[in-house]
Length: 130
Image 1 (cartoon, rainbow, N blue to C red):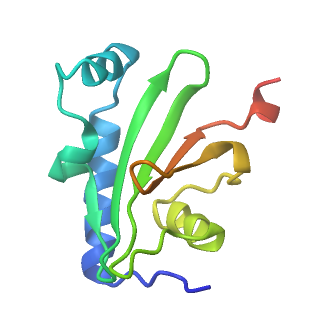
Image 2 (image 1 turned 180 degrees about the horizontal axis):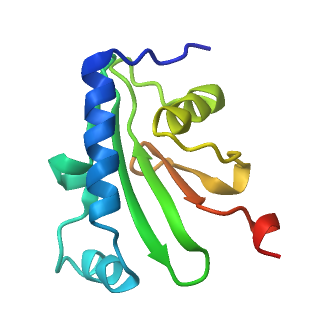
């Protein structure tokens, strides 16, 4: 297990990405446009990306999901050695993005085809909304 270390440069990238995400929240129509190649996906936009010195690439954005409400979305690609983050690294990462919600297995998807981890984390847990 190795935890990511975020220096001031990476922390500044994270702050910029968070600010941009809150200023540009995606809606369901935007997601459909992305799926139909009518809109550029957040992962291809520099303002949603953080590059960590170990070679890890992180994309962060917000979506107003029709069934889950507003959600944090992450796409995380492997580090320079080809390793995807483990659970403790994912938890450390969401805390670095100032998210204090519990990370549950249902929030994590390991996309083998694209060799990345995807996290979809609702602003409120399901237990909070019942």
